[in-house]
Image 1 (cartoon, rainbow over the protein chains, first blue to last red):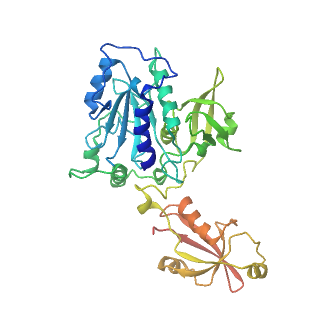
Image 2: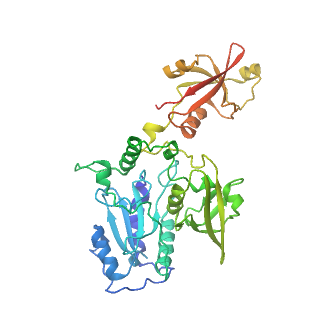
Image 3: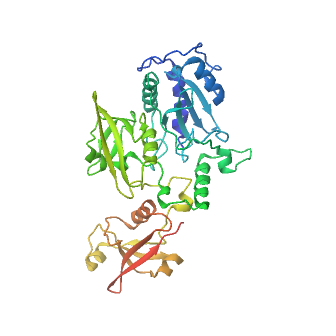
Length: 67
Length: 327
């Protein structure tokens, strides 16, 4: 489902990457914020968890079949 | 804002724990928001029968992200409960060990099959992830936890919810999105009561939604996991009566009234005959055409349900029970 929205979501997320959040800034929980790869997307849950532990950020996990 | 999250994209769920990634598996797109201890803040996604994008927007995603960030910052953040604690791997559930792509709806089909095999299948399980409208709440598209309107004479009306209210929890589930609301409603009982809390301005309110039998019923015709097995089909069709015929039978211009013309074996076996004029369902006259009636049956009933059709034949009225099957 959601072919159009899924595409827009992924493209849109890249577009809003620099948008100031209205919510409070996440508390750093150790480690520097560091994106994996140029796009900032990680393709492994374990690596994502590791990054979340290091940065204190919450995870956003998109589940979507390979289009 | 996306930089405030660790962003993970998964294109297969074969080896992941379904107790963690529990969502409406008839979707093929879902977003989870977790902390670093595998606890779920929120879900994003969801749809209705109108279309895959009918309940989503990028603004809605942005709204959910903001709401999750605010929760993440709390000293005592709230998380969505898990249904079970035991790890459940999608690959083991489906028995899908091939190299091809396992579709999400196949996960749900496998779960349903397991319930049938173990004798735990119940008819109500056909209706998963009810829409908030089922309890009388229409949520905004772009802010998935904000009430857009309240439907009249519904549990939400009686609970005192109003447009503009921001849902906080439904049952034990924190609500950040439309998908959270659907998840919470999926976990709710098929009959009974359900606690709901919300913010009106700065004021926190709560009430109980009263849930009557059948409240989860919704259109499942789009759901790949159940539509082939459970969507009921009327085994007859026909043409609507014209105005002259309606006058002759004393029927209104809008009520259901069609002459049976194409009957399948199951209809004949039930006692229906070509030429019968169908005028009521379960003793209720309905304002709809023959075509709309066929769609109504598909949406309101499931395979195995028995309906009673009232038909006119040779100047007499007959009531004919008919057990519905699939297509």
